[in-house]
Length: 293
Image (cartoon, rainbow, N blue to C red; front, side):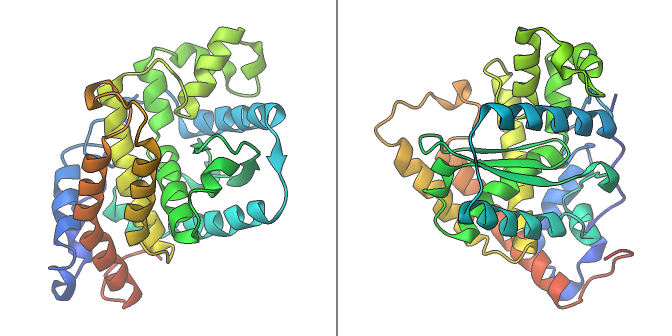
């Protein structure tokens, strides 16, 4: 199954007064028009949005049963940031700018904080099911930095990366079998792999393929946090912190890694910043033409 074709050319929505500020964004969008997904790639998807959401709901419930959810001020913090990002996903202009195809009826956002100080991670399952580990909150000390991570994770779900991974790993039949409340019917191995693919947590993945998804999630997340009213410069500071955390640890070369190297990631974000800021400024000042919000 292929993703729907992208909307028409997107550069029209930024007036000449902000064309210089948004040059990086426009150039990126022109490249995206050659493909079907937000990164300009043709996406081969295994599932419908409804099937994605059903599996995300089940995987989320299974994850919460095995984890230790936290219900204190840390959860409230995650909810506040998450709901602002959630609102940003509904901005029609933003969807067109970064070429997102979302069916809102299948996005039922939910937030959890999982008690594990050693795990510096977060994830967003299809349908908007977000979980943040307490270890991440110790690194993302500002809400701007937290928004950078949560925007990134939401980007995976909004770009249908899970459906793409399931197709890549030939898990479509198992995934369809598990949809509609039947995840528990799968064998333990298949269930574990499927949940991993849904949350980008599987150990067996196509490495170069996943790096492309990571870069797309970085790009989407940067625009989401910006349109949610957070400072996109803090995406740089967060990933710099992550680089320091990994210092002294043996990090595999990029060809063996599922994430872009820190230098590459920071370079990409720095190139995208002017476009994100310019588009958001134009949106706030009403210097755009859009048929939606």
